[in-house]
Length: 323
Image 1 (cartoon, rainbow, N blue to C red):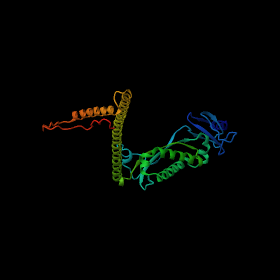
Image 2: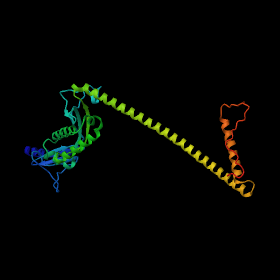
Image 3: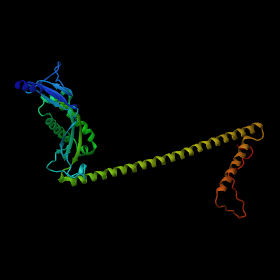
Image 4: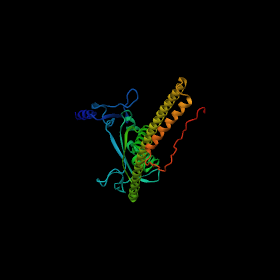
């Protein structure tokens, strides 16, 4: 009777529970139970039964759980300071050599999860998959730092560096059958070594001054270019106005002269006066008009009282019969 009770209890120990956020894999006689297609069989949440121990064992895995591992310096000794110039504990620092021969303390966080399609690799194919993933992350970070400069790591290329390390870790994890899926790599703190922090501050200040000077010079250059363009446009517009006025004035004078010539020839044909007489009369009238216009602009006029006549004639009348 006691044997029957013990046997019954032993057989009942084959029942096992899989929680809602877990997936189970059963191993019978040390080998994982597989489906007909050869893949590892996954047991969903709920009550299940299989052979009791030691004939079978159950491995429970949280597939949807996002896990995180950190490489490098993670904690901050002084919460009030953050970023590039915070204090670093030398005992916990992780130093990497950059491509421009600088040493930096760099920290990254890798977000990953167990792959539902490769849970067999996670449980059986890989030895300490999470430890191997950490080693891969350190290797990828060291290689990325070696091909990057301080400016690229600190500010300019963080996003590009993050994408590069994420893709490389995803590829390496799949190639080495870790059974893990890398979701993202986050670059945390980037800090200079304590011994050279002052020099880094000087470099950063010099870089900031340089950027300020460049921006000011660029703004001044753009302002002068705009002023030069405006001045050139005003000169161009003024020249265009003068050109149009000159062209219109020349056209008007040309039309007036053409009408005058036509009038002279008409007078000659009608017999009122000869062409030479009409021409001489016209020249005299032009002379008087011009003289009147010139004298109007003269600021001072001198009247001579010498008792002698002054001849101001420029165009004299032609004698009869002369050409």
